Image (cartoon, rainbow, N blue to C red; front, side, top):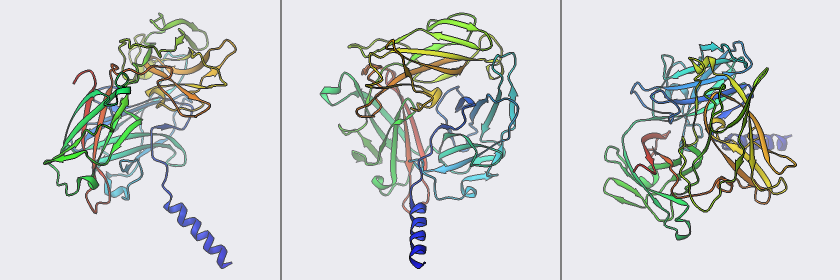
Length: 418
Protein backbone atom coordinates (compact mmCIF):
# COMPACT_ATOMS: atom_id res chain seq x y z
CA UNK A 1 0.00 0.00 0.00
CA UNK A 2 2.81 2.40 0.92
CA UNK A 3 4.63 1.60 -2.33
CA UNK A 4 1.47 2.27 -4.36
CA UNK A 5 1.02 5.64 -2.62
CA UNK A 6 4.62 6.63 -3.37
CA UNK A 7 4.17 5.76 -7.05
CA UNK A 8 0.95 7.82 -7.17
CA UNK A 9 2.62 10.84 -5.54
CA UNK A 10 5.59 10.58 -7.92
CA UNK A 11 3.23 10.54 -10.91
CA UNK A 12 1.48 13.66 -9.61
CA UNK A 13 4.83 15.38 -9.17
CA UNK A 14 5.89 14.56 -12.73
CA UNK A 15 2.56 15.83 -14.05
CA UNK A 16 2.89 19.09 -12.12
CA UNK A 17 6.45 19.65 -13.33
CA UNK A 18 5.74 18.74 -16.95
CA UNK A 19 5.73 21.73 -19.28
CA UNK A 20 2.34 22.44 -20.81
CA UNK A 21 2.14 22.86 -24.60
CA UNK A 22 2.77 26.49 -25.61
CA UNK A 23 -0.29 28.61 -26.29
CA UNK A 24 -0.93 29.48 -29.93
CA UNK A 25 -3.57 30.81 -32.30
CA UNK A 26 -6.16 28.04 -32.40
CA UNK A 27 -9.82 27.56 -33.33
CA UNK A 28 -11.41 24.62 -31.52
CA UNK A 29 -14.90 24.52 -33.08
CA UNK A 30 -15.65 23.90 -36.76
CA UNK A 31 -18.56 26.38 -36.74
CA UNK A 32 -16.29 29.28 -35.74
CA UNK A 33 -15.04 31.05 -38.88
CA UNK A 34 -13.30 34.20 -40.12
CA UNK A 35 -11.33 34.97 -36.95
CA UNK A 36 -9.66 38.39 -37.14
CA UNK A 37 -7.36 39.83 -34.48
CA UNK A 38 -5.45 43.06 -35.10
CA UNK A 39 -4.49 46.50 -33.81
CA UNK A 40 -7.51 48.75 -34.39
CA UNK A 41 -5.35 51.30 -36.23
CA UNK A 42 -5.11 49.00 -39.27
CA UNK A 43 -7.07 45.93 -40.34
CA UNK A 44 -5.07 42.68 -40.29
CA UNK A 45 -2.10 44.37 -38.60
CA UNK A 46 0.15 42.71 -36.02
CA UNK A 47 -1.81 42.38 -32.71
CA UNK A 48 0.48 44.51 -30.55
CA UNK A 49 -0.41 47.48 -28.33
CA UNK A 50 1.65 49.80 -26.15
CA UNK A 51 0.81 49.54 -22.46
CA UNK A 52 -1.21 52.53 -21.22
CA UNK A 53 -1.30 54.21 -24.64
CA UNK A 54 -5.03 53.90 -25.30
CA UNK A 55 -4.40 51.56 -28.24
CA UNK A 56 -6.77 48.64 -28.76
CA UNK A 57 -6.92 45.32 -30.51
CA UNK A 58 -10.07 44.05 -32.22
CA UNK A 59 -11.22 40.43 -32.15
CA UNK A 60 -13.95 39.46 -34.59
CA UNK A 61 -15.36 36.06 -35.54
CA UNK A 62 -18.48 34.40 -36.92
CA UNK A 63 -20.50 31.59 -35.36
CA UNK A 64 -22.18 29.65 -38.18
CA UNK A 65 -24.43 27.76 -35.77
CA UNK A 66 -26.59 30.90 -35.59
CA UNK A 67 -28.53 32.32 -32.67
CA UNK A 68 -26.69 33.64 -29.64
CA UNK A 69 -24.38 31.82 -27.27
CA UNK A 70 -22.66 32.87 -24.06
CA UNK A 71 -19.00 33.46 -24.88
CA UNK A 72 -16.63 34.51 -22.09
CA UNK A 73 -13.02 35.58 -22.37
CA UNK A 74 -9.92 36.20 -20.28
CA UNK A 75 -6.24 37.03 -20.68
CA UNK A 76 -3.33 35.00 -19.35
CA UNK A 77 0.22 36.31 -19.09
CA UNK A 78 2.94 34.18 -20.72
CA UNK A 79 6.70 34.18 -21.22
CA UNK A 80 8.53 34.47 -24.55
CA UNK A 81 7.97 30.74 -25.18
CA UNK A 82 4.21 31.10 -24.57
CA UNK A 83 4.29 29.17 -21.34
CA UNK A 84 2.06 30.56 -18.52
CA UNK A 85 3.86 33.01 -16.23
CA UNK A 86 3.98 32.22 -12.51
CA UNK A 87 1.67 35.11 -11.68
CA UNK A 88 -1.88 35.30 -10.38
CA UNK A 89 -4.46 37.13 -12.56
CA UNK A 90 -4.61 39.92 -9.98
CA UNK A 91 -0.92 40.65 -10.67
CA UNK A 92 -1.32 41.24 -14.40
CA UNK A 93 -5.00 42.30 -14.84
CA UNK A 94 -6.93 45.29 -13.56
CA UNK A 95 -10.63 45.13 -12.71
CA UNK A 96 -12.12 41.70 -13.51
CA UNK A 97 -10.31 38.51 -14.48
CA UNK A 98 -12.90 37.45 -17.07
CA UNK A 99 -15.89 38.92 -18.87
CA UNK A 100 -18.61 38.14 -21.43
CA UNK A 101 -18.64 39.15 -25.10
CA UNK A 102 -21.76 41.30 -25.43
CA UNK A 103 -21.21 42.84 -28.89
CA UNK A 104 -22.81 40.73 -31.62
CA UNK A 105 -24.94 41.14 -34.76
CA UNK A 106 -26.92 38.71 -36.93
CA UNK A 107 -26.18 38.19 -40.61
CA UNK A 108 -28.50 39.86 -43.10
CA UNK A 109 -29.42 38.89 -46.70
CA UNK A 110 -26.91 36.04 -46.88
CA UNK A 111 -27.23 32.40 -47.96
CA UNK A 112 -25.22 31.32 -44.92
CA UNK A 113 -26.74 32.47 -41.63
CA UNK A 114 -24.32 33.39 -38.86
CA UNK A 115 -23.80 35.58 -35.82
CA UNK A 116 -20.83 37.94 -35.82
CA UNK A 117 -19.13 38.59 -32.46
CA UNK A 118 -16.70 41.42 -31.77
CA UNK A 119 -14.49 42.36 -28.82
CA UNK A 120 -12.21 45.34 -28.14
CA UNK A 121 -9.26 45.08 -25.73
CA UNK A 122 -8.37 46.68 -23.37
CA UNK A 123 -11.84 47.69 -22.20
CA UNK A 124 -13.37 48.87 -18.92
CA UNK A 125 -13.47 45.32 -17.53
CA UNK A 126 -10.23 43.71 -18.76
CA UNK A 127 -7.02 45.79 -18.71
CA UNK A 128 -3.44 44.44 -18.74
CA UNK A 129 -1.27 45.83 -15.94
CA UNK A 130 2.15 44.77 -17.19
CA UNK A 131 3.85 44.24 -20.54
CA UNK A 132 4.54 40.87 -22.10
CA UNK A 133 2.87 38.11 -24.05
CA UNK A 134 -0.81 37.46 -23.34
CA UNK A 135 -3.00 34.66 -24.59
CA UNK A 136 -6.62 35.63 -25.17
CA UNK A 137 -8.96 32.74 -24.38
CA UNK A 138 -12.57 32.66 -25.57
CA UNK A 139 -14.77 29.91 -24.14
CA UNK A 140 -18.45 29.03 -23.76
CA UNK A 141 -20.68 29.34 -20.68
CA UNK A 142 -17.82 30.53 -18.46
CA UNK A 143 -16.17 27.09 -18.69
CA UNK A 144 -12.58 27.02 -19.93
CA UNK A 145 -13.02 23.32 -20.72
CA UNK A 146 -15.33 24.52 -23.54
CA UNK A 147 -12.65 26.48 -25.37
CA UNK A 148 -13.71 28.26 -28.57
CA UNK A 149 -10.51 29.96 -29.70
CA UNK A 150 -7.20 31.42 -28.53
CA UNK A 151 -5.22 34.38 -29.90
CA UNK A 152 -1.75 35.71 -29.14
CA UNK A 153 -1.64 39.32 -27.92
CA UNK A 154 1.53 41.38 -27.45
CA UNK A 155 1.64 44.25 -24.92
CA UNK A 156 4.82 46.34 -25.06
CA UNK A 157 6.44 49.06 -22.96
CA UNK A 158 8.93 50.68 -25.32
CA UNK A 159 12.14 50.86 -23.29
CA UNK A 160 14.57 49.81 -26.03
CA UNK A 161 15.05 50.75 -29.69
CA UNK A 162 15.55 48.22 -32.49
CA UNK A 163 17.33 48.84 -35.80
CA UNK A 164 17.66 46.16 -38.50
CA UNK A 165 18.74 45.47 -42.08
CA UNK A 166 18.22 42.61 -44.54
CA UNK A 167 20.91 41.27 -46.83
CA UNK A 168 21.54 38.15 -48.87
CA UNK A 169 22.71 35.09 -46.97
CA UNK A 170 26.38 34.83 -45.98
CA UNK A 171 26.23 31.22 -47.13
CA UNK A 172 27.32 31.23 -50.77
CA UNK A 173 25.03 28.29 -51.57
CA UNK A 174 21.99 30.21 -50.25
CA UNK A 175 22.57 33.70 -51.60
CA UNK A 176 19.95 33.36 -54.35
CA UNK A 177 17.29 32.07 -51.97
CA UNK A 178 17.81 33.34 -48.40
CA UNK A 179 17.47 36.64 -46.55
CA UNK A 180 19.67 37.33 -43.53
CA UNK A 181 18.50 39.80 -40.89
CA UNK A 182 21.05 41.74 -38.81
CA UNK A 183 19.78 43.91 -35.98
CA UNK A 184 20.86 46.00 -33.00
CA UNK A 185 19.01 46.55 -29.71
CA UNK A 186 19.75 49.83 -27.92
CA UNK A 187 19.28 49.22 -24.17
CA UNK A 188 20.10 52.76 -23.02
CA UNK A 189 16.68 53.10 -21.38
CA UNK A 190 16.91 49.79 -19.56
CA UNK A 191 18.98 48.69 -16.56
CA UNK A 192 20.55 45.51 -17.89
CA UNK A 193 23.18 43.85 -15.73
CA UNK A 194 23.67 40.63 -17.70
CA UNK A 195 22.38 40.91 -21.29
CA UNK A 196 23.11 37.26 -22.05
CA UNK A 197 20.81 36.14 -19.24
CA UNK A 198 18.20 38.92 -19.17
CA UNK A 199 17.44 39.78 -22.82
CA UNK A 200 15.93 37.60 -25.54
CA UNK A 201 14.85 38.71 -29.02
CA UNK A 202 12.30 36.85 -31.16
CA UNK A 203 12.47 37.38 -34.91
CA UNK A 204 9.56 36.30 -37.14
CA UNK A 205 8.89 36.44 -40.87
CA UNK A 206 5.42 37.70 -41.88
CA UNK A 207 4.16 37.21 -38.28
CA UNK A 208 4.31 33.43 -38.71
CA UNK A 209 5.17 31.78 -35.37
CA UNK A 210 6.62 28.69 -37.08
CA UNK A 211 9.32 30.89 -38.64
CA UNK A 212 10.33 32.40 -35.27
CA UNK A 213 13.99 32.42 -34.26
CA UNK A 214 14.75 33.21 -30.61
CA UNK A 215 18.06 35.03 -30.12
CA UNK A 216 19.40 34.49 -26.61
CA UNK A 217 23.03 35.61 -26.95
CA UNK A 218 24.19 38.77 -28.80
CA UNK A 219 27.11 38.48 -31.18
CA UNK A 220 28.84 41.24 -29.23
CA UNK A 221 28.05 44.20 -26.96
CA UNK A 222 28.96 47.77 -27.94
CA UNK A 223 28.32 50.09 -25.00
CA UNK A 224 24.56 49.93 -24.38
CA UNK A 225 23.91 48.25 -27.73
CA UNK A 226 23.42 44.54 -28.24
CA UNK A 227 24.49 43.55 -31.76
CA UNK A 228 23.15 40.40 -33.46
CA UNK A 229 24.97 39.90 -36.76
CA UNK A 230 26.82 36.59 -36.56
CA UNK A 231 27.13 34.99 -39.99
CA UNK A 232 25.33 31.83 -38.84
CA UNK A 233 22.17 33.34 -37.30
CA UNK A 234 18.82 34.75 -38.46
CA UNK A 235 19.03 33.30 -41.96
CA UNK A 236 15.52 32.92 -43.44
CA UNK A 237 14.32 31.28 -46.62
CA UNK A 238 13.08 34.14 -48.80
CA UNK A 239 10.19 31.93 -49.97
CA UNK A 240 7.85 33.38 -52.62
CA UNK A 241 5.06 35.92 -52.81
CA UNK A 242 1.72 34.45 -51.74
CA UNK A 243 -0.98 33.33 -54.15
CA UNK A 244 -4.29 35.17 -53.82
CA UNK A 245 -7.96 35.30 -54.78
CA UNK A 246 -10.59 38.03 -54.55
CA UNK A 247 -14.26 37.38 -53.72
CA UNK A 248 -15.28 40.89 -52.68
CA UNK A 249 -18.13 40.42 -55.13
CA UNK A 250 -19.94 37.20 -55.99
CA UNK A 251 -21.58 38.77 -59.06
CA UNK A 252 -18.50 38.93 -61.27
CA UNK A 253 -15.44 36.74 -61.74
CA UNK A 254 -12.15 38.16 -60.49
CA UNK A 255 -8.81 37.32 -62.13
CA UNK A 256 -8.50 34.07 -60.14
CA UNK A 257 -12.13 32.92 -60.32
CA UNK A 258 -13.26 30.50 -63.02
CA UNK A 259 -16.97 30.11 -62.22
CA UNK A 260 -19.49 31.15 -59.58
CA UNK A 261 -22.61 29.08 -58.90
CA UNK A 262 -25.56 30.22 -56.78
CA UNK A 263 -28.17 27.78 -55.55
CA UNK A 264 -28.83 27.01 -51.89
CA UNK A 265 -25.24 28.16 -51.26
CA UNK A 266 -22.49 30.04 -53.06
CA UNK A 267 -19.91 27.90 -54.87
CA UNK A 268 -16.73 29.37 -56.36
CA UNK A 269 -14.44 27.41 -58.69
CA UNK A 270 -10.93 28.88 -58.74
CA UNK A 271 -8.52 28.53 -61.63
CA UNK A 272 -6.02 25.70 -61.32
CA UNK A 273 -2.79 26.36 -59.44
CA UNK A 274 0.51 25.20 -60.98
CA UNK A 275 3.73 24.57 -59.09
CA UNK A 276 5.72 27.83 -58.84
CA UNK A 277 9.12 26.32 -58.09
CA UNK A 278 10.77 27.93 -61.12
CA UNK A 279 14.38 28.96 -61.81
CA UNK A 280 13.74 32.71 -61.52
CA UNK A 281 11.69 35.04 -59.33
CA UNK A 282 8.54 36.72 -60.71
CA UNK A 283 7.23 39.89 -59.09
CA UNK A 284 3.66 39.49 -57.78
CA UNK A 285 2.05 41.89 -55.32
CA UNK A 286 0.68 40.20 -52.21
CA UNK A 287 -0.40 40.90 -48.62
CA UNK A 288 2.25 38.75 -46.93
CA UNK A 289 -0.20 35.97 -46.12
CA UNK A 290 -2.99 38.14 -44.69
CA UNK A 291 -6.70 38.12 -45.43
CA UNK A 292 -9.32 40.90 -45.40
CA UNK A 293 -13.07 40.43 -44.96
CA UNK A 294 -14.62 42.72 -47.60
CA UNK A 295 -17.90 42.88 -49.52
CA UNK A 296 -18.52 45.36 -52.34
CA UNK A 297 -22.02 43.91 -52.85
CA UNK A 298 -23.17 45.18 -49.44
CA UNK A 299 -22.52 47.89 -46.86
CA UNK A 300 -21.08 46.07 -43.82
CA UNK A 301 -19.10 42.84 -44.40
CA UNK A 302 -19.44 41.94 -40.73
CA UNK A 303 -23.15 41.22 -41.27
CA UNK A 304 -23.77 41.05 -45.05
CA UNK A 305 -20.56 39.38 -46.21
CA UNK A 306 -21.65 35.96 -47.45
CA UNK A 307 -19.85 32.63 -47.33
CA UNK A 308 -18.91 30.53 -50.34
CA UNK A 309 -17.54 27.04 -50.85
CA UNK A 310 -14.17 27.68 -52.51
CA UNK A 311 -12.74 24.89 -54.68
CA UNK A 312 -8.94 24.80 -55.02
CA UNK A 313 -7.01 22.48 -57.32
CA UNK A 314 -3.26 22.09 -57.58
CA UNK A 315 -0.97 20.45 -60.12
CA UNK A 316 1.85 19.39 -57.80
CA UNK A 317 3.34 16.74 -60.10
CA UNK A 318 3.47 14.51 -57.05
CA UNK A 319 1.27 11.58 -56.05
CA UNK A 320 -0.27 10.61 -52.71
CA UNK A 321 2.33 7.84 -52.47
CA UNK A 322 5.03 10.52 -52.28
CA UNK A 323 3.46 12.90 -49.78
CA UNK A 324 0.60 15.24 -48.93
CA UNK A 325 -0.23 18.82 -49.92
CA UNK A 326 -1.79 21.40 -47.58
CA UNK A 327 -3.18 24.91 -48.14
CA UNK A 328 -2.29 27.55 -45.54
CA UNK A 329 -2.45 31.27 -44.81
CA UNK A 330 -3.33 33.62 -42.01
CA UNK A 331 -6.97 32.67 -42.60
CA UNK A 332 -6.33 29.22 -41.03
CA UNK A 333 -3.36 30.18 -38.80
CA UNK A 334 -1.01 28.21 -41.11
CA UNK A 335 -2.28 24.97 -39.55
CA UNK A 336 -1.38 21.66 -41.14
CA UNK A 337 -4.40 19.55 -40.17
CA UNK A 338 -7.34 17.69 -41.70
CA UNK A 339 -9.08 20.96 -42.53
CA UNK A 340 -6.14 22.22 -44.62
CA UNK A 341 -5.25 18.88 -46.20
CA UNK A 342 -5.77 18.40 -49.93
CA UNK A 343 -7.09 15.20 -51.51
CA UNK A 344 -5.53 13.44 -54.50
CA UNK A 345 -7.66 12.36 -57.48
CA UNK A 346 -7.14 9.91 -60.32
CA UNK A 347 -6.37 12.76 -62.73
CA UNK A 348 -3.17 13.49 -60.88
CA UNK A 349 -4.35 16.71 -59.24
CA UNK A 350 -4.79 17.79 -55.62
CA UNK A 351 -8.01 19.47 -54.56
CA UNK A 352 -9.95 20.73 -51.53
CA UNK A 353 -13.06 22.71 -50.62
CA UNK A 354 -13.04 25.47 -47.98
CA UNK A 355 -15.95 27.52 -46.69
CA UNK A 356 -14.72 31.12 -46.60
CA UNK A 357 -16.29 34.52 -46.18
CA UNK A 358 -16.15 37.16 -48.91
CA UNK A 359 -12.89 39.07 -49.08
CA UNK A 360 -9.31 39.09 -50.32
CA UNK A 361 -7.15 36.14 -49.28
CA UNK A 362 -3.49 35.21 -49.53
CA UNK A 363 -2.55 31.53 -49.46
CA UNK A 364 0.19 29.06 -50.33
CA UNK A 365 0.75 25.32 -50.52
CA UNK A 366 2.94 23.24 -48.22
CA UNK A 367 4.30 19.83 -49.19
CA UNK A 368 4.91 17.11 -46.58
CA UNK A 369 6.92 14.16 -48.01
CA UNK A 370 6.05 10.70 -46.74
CA UNK A 371 9.74 9.94 -46.29
CA UNK A 372 10.66 12.74 -43.88
CA UNK A 373 7.25 14.03 -42.67
CA UNK A 374 8.91 17.46 -42.57
CA UNK A 375 6.76 20.33 -43.93
CA UNK A 376 8.32 22.20 -46.86
CA UNK A 377 6.71 25.49 -47.92
CA UNK A 378 9.19 26.12 -50.76
CA UNK A 379 8.90 22.85 -52.71
CA UNK A 380 5.67 23.91 -54.47
CA UNK A 381 6.11 27.68 -54.17
CA UNK A 382 9.77 28.39 -54.89
CA UNK A 383 12.41 30.18 -52.83
CA UNK A 384 13.91 33.53 -53.84
CA UNK A 385 16.02 36.23 -52.21
CA UNK A 386 14.03 38.95 -54.04
CA UNK A 387 10.73 38.09 -52.27
CA UNK A 388 9.19 40.94 -50.30
CA UNK A 389 8.78 39.92 -46.65
CA UNK A 390 7.91 41.64 -43.39
CA UNK A 391 9.92 40.88 -40.25
CA UNK A 392 8.82 41.42 -36.65
CA UNK A 393 11.34 41.80 -33.81
CA UNK A 394 10.18 41.42 -30.20
CA UNK A 395 12.58 42.20 -27.35
CA UNK A 396 11.94 40.42 -24.04
CA UNK A 397 13.53 41.35 -20.72
CA UNK A 398 13.56 39.31 -17.53
CA UNK A 399 15.48 40.96 -14.72
CA UNK A 400 17.45 38.66 -12.46
CA UNK A 401 15.06 37.47 -9.74
CA UNK A 402 11.91 38.59 -11.59
CA UNK A 403 8.93 36.23 -11.80
CA UNK A 404 7.86 37.23 -15.30
CA UNK A 405 9.19 38.35 -18.68
CA UNK A 406 8.47 41.83 -20.00
CA UNK A 407 8.11 42.87 -23.64
CA UNK A 408 10.25 46.02 -23.80
CA UNK A 409 10.73 46.61 -27.51
CA UNK A 410 9.22 46.00 -30.92
CA UNK A 411 10.44 46.66 -34.42
CA UNK A 412 9.24 45.99 -37.97
CA UNK A 413 11.27 45.65 -41.13
CA UNK A 414 10.28 45.25 -44.77
CA UNK A 415 12.85 43.53 -46.93
CA UNK A 416 12.01 45.77 -49.90
CA UNK A 417 11.75 49.09 -48.02
CA UNK A 418 14.88 49.40 -45.93
